[in-house]
Image (cartoon, rainbow, N blue to C red; front, side, top):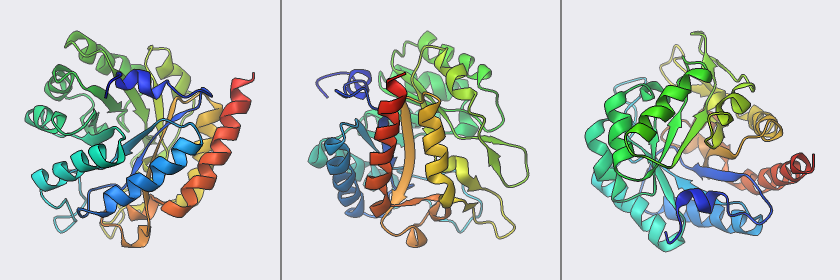
Length: 273
């Protein structure tokens, strides 16, 4: 990108929120491009800066037989193709320090999974790539404690960093969103994103397959915008029932345009105060 990712995310003429959205994992070589193009058209019409999200590999799965990906190099090539053909920045997760430099060759933003947000070597490796680093708040951490994750990125030479809330777990197959976390983390001087769909997961069910509450997606998203979230993270799929990962909490792709329109209207109202 000619401009920094931070500048791009703030570039909306209407001071709108930005969006990270896409499928949970790269499932094949073609559908991610189609999904990205669809979302890019919608977000362009609403002046919403857009970053395509897709995990090139899923490392945190409930069961050994869960789908993890189509192969690292093949999936990273798909992400690069999305970037080139659709013309939008791309974000993917990394899980170990040695993955940072590899993934950085293909994407614009590196994402640190919530369970790994305290892993110093991983954060330092991500920062040293020079890429924008999005850190998900651990389900087991307070918003205040994310100060130390931000400090690690900056002390390692990183300059572009954001924090993402995805709820807090109490160990009973559910997550709770405490919206006080948005202004608390914004006070650290970094953009704050609400991961709407992952906050509605119901992990570790007895079947070993994550459940979810997609009926609450708009509720969480509206509350996040009202509380000042800079960005929204939504996993989406043309047919969540056939998604190979996290389908139970995804938004069906054709429902995204109307949701974004309503959220943009709400953001304009919030900006007017």
